[in-house]
Length: 488
Image (cartoon, rainbow, N blue to C red; front, side, top):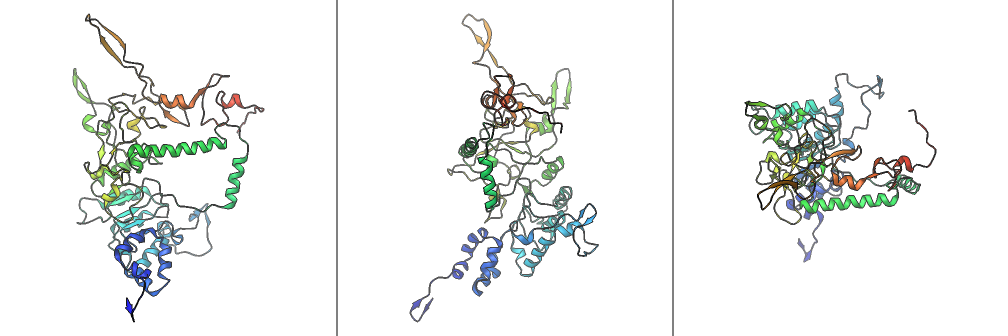
């Protein structure tokens, strides 16, 4: 602006008046910072309250007024507060009160309809409130994140989702196209407490008996974990955990009802988890062939639909580097086979942007290998995440503890026409076995790294899970103090 020959500098209000700039900056600002910015001047107040780009991405997980700071309503029959409440108030209405107040405030200011991405992780989100977000016209949410939500009835939420995707639903509904529910929420940065830091240093300075409990061992374990994450990202060419050898991606195993709900929502609502496509979930393969009688169903072959909870990495089977169901590749596989990736997208509310893996080198998308735990029983190492498919290792489907060794033989055809059976090169050891309850099912390679035999009692022990053990003795033989029997 030119006034009397002087050019005024560009202000922050002028910069944020550009919708493109505001669209890129607003998702990185907390809600409290946005309101603090609007309170600084009249120009910024108009920019915040008159623009539709400010609250396109709304994260309420860090808003203090959205948290219910009270104990449950009924705690042993004792009233938790002295104020009188309306007797017709239900428990869901009580726990959804803070969020409803925020939504009402945004609706009065004509901002609620502009929210396309809503994050409610860790808050009190009853199923009735999710139903309103999905069904009410005052909401226009496309991607909803309710990971680790409290007071959320999962059975009721399943009914809400099944009703929302019913065949007789109105055209253009539901507006919600993606829901983050199964995975863990994003870590919230917390400032360090000086007292807690002092206690942590005291614990580190205190002497410990175990070789794995020392400070040097703990630092080494942390660096090993970081190097493992860096190696997984380099092998998968992406930082997305679903495409790495991450192991279990869902802390709590989803129920079969959730698998049926996700299957009913295929093509309509996407989730941050997908159904397992292993051959045991295919009804056409759940038969055994017998020449003497017609094909009959095998009781141990077919599995009901289940959610894939294990990320196996980009290399596939350890032997054939593939799988019977073929991996899902973004851009080629149907959208229902691709999970929503974390974190929640900031600038785009489309499902494609939430499912697209971002490679480190800019190359094509990596393959996605995911399975449920039932399809990996006896064939997946829980430590290094190696796995074998059904064609390379036929593990027992009944026994929980499977055999560890499988020997392959070939026929060595001699020049004189005689044949004899010889080992191929050496014994091929595949499959997993549970040698340590803390480590879980592990392969022979991981067993050689962490399982030792005590030189005194000759029993096997794990270096990591036996804190008082040493490199040559188990925790019992390495304990020099007086042993007492603890009755309780």
